[in-house]
Length: 187
Image (cartoon, rainbow, N blue to C red; front, side, top):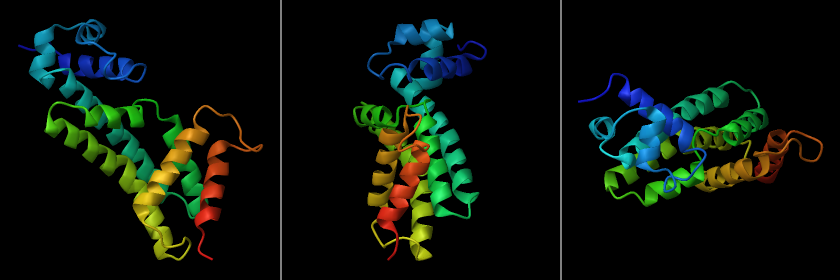
């Protein structure tokens, strides 16, 4: 039997613990203590720690994806949209994107591996790819494989923008967006 609100308590515990430590470092006992529930509640709602982690990643990436899609649609300028996307990616701390993808590849259950990968593609990759593809279609950017551009953009956003207050006297996200657009501008 499950505790009242046990699912939400476990997701809140995951939201608190997983961003601070890797998947492997967070133990079941730690999650249960943080949530204030017993093991049967975890098993009832998620099956195991792996299932809880997957649900946590899906929930947090779903929120990020909605935010990225909104940002991508609210600008007339590609550079302004990319600056906001870079900032959003850098400020997103609910899930370590690289850590979650790595943990997902190591999941025991193939269905869990697929769910994490699908959530990443749907909520992070696709909003950026859609924006870049539209820019290519409008002739603003060189024709390049969209996947390659997404990986380059995301890597730069995470590496250059996370934890920096300025870069070349400007906000890192603004600098990265300008640099990215300039590098791939249609000539």
